Structures are given as C-alpha cells and as structure tokens.
Picture 1 (tube, rainbow, N blue to C red):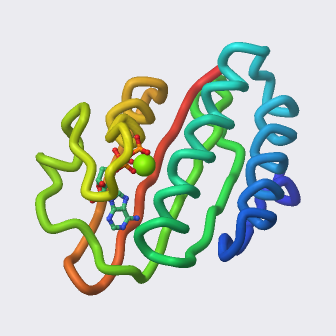
Picture 2: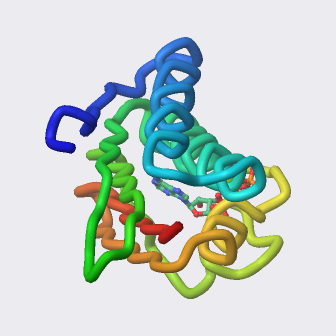
Picture 3: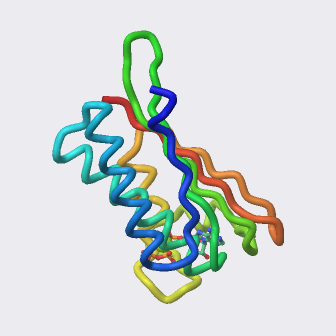
Length: 133
Ligand SMILES: Nc1ncnc2c1ncn2[C@@H]1O[C@H](COP(=O)(O)OP(=O)(O)OP(=O)(O)O)[C@@H](O)[C@H]1O
Ligand SMILES: [Mg+2]
C-alpha cells in the first residue's frame, strides 16, 4: 500500500485536524475498528497538539505496516522545536511544563503497542508509535 503513506505539515489547528482525519482514514483501511481507530486518532491529536504547543510547527507522517501477516500503522510526529530536557519526567503522568493535564505522552504510550521518543535539547523531538490490528 505504498500510496497510503501521508506526510502532513502541522502548523495550524486546521492542518492538525486534516492530519488527524488522514490518520483515521488510513487506520480504517488497515483494518482498525472503532475503539482502536479512536485511540490512533487520539494519539495523533496528542502528538500534534504537543507540536503546536511546544515546537510551533512540525510534521506528522503516517504509513501502513505489514510484518509476518500482521497489519499495523506507524505514526511519526517530528519537530525541530526546543526538545525535551528530561524525558523521564515528561513521560510521567501529570507532568506538564505547559499547565495542562500532562497525560498526553504517557497516555499515547499506553494506547499504542510500540512507542519511541527521540529528542535532543534545542534540536527537536521525534515520536514514533506503532499499533497492530
Ligand atoms: N514536541 C515537544 N517538544 C518539546 N517539549 C515537549 C514536546 N512534547 C512534549 N513536551 C514536553 O513534555 C511534557 C509532557 O507532555 P504531555 O503531552 O505528556 O503533557 P502536556 O502536553 O504538558 O499536557 P497534556 O498533553 O495533558 O495537555 C510537556 O509538558 C512538555 O514539557
Ligand atoms: Mg500534550
């Protein structure tokens, strides 16, 4: 399914909404049903919101996965923002430097099967998540 991969810039609320819609469409094509599809869209929303809030702008890539008869979806949210100083802290429930709930990243990790966070202070952040049908 090479034509189903998308890369969407996330610079505004409108672009984030578009990215979330595209993620939902691909998730459905891959075979995710209501609950799992919602989780994937929520993950895209949380990561995209972090991009807008902390980095100002970035990109969300989404692609279908196939591995040993399994199907899945991969989302990569990347930005060239300030990065995260303390990843352990950022991954804790209720830690927020922005005055909100601080449940975004740990919540996304719980909803997905695979979660990788790469960040370098002053360089940016890349979060890669995968979920299998
Ligand atoms: N893309 C990013 N760039 C820089 N810092 C980030 C980024 N994403 C998350 N962070 C840092 O990690 C912290 C935790 O993120 P998380 O999404 O869990 O919580 P939050 O965004 O503060 O609150 P919530 O998501 O519940 O509204 C943030 O407060 C911020 O300090
Ligand atoms: Mg957040």
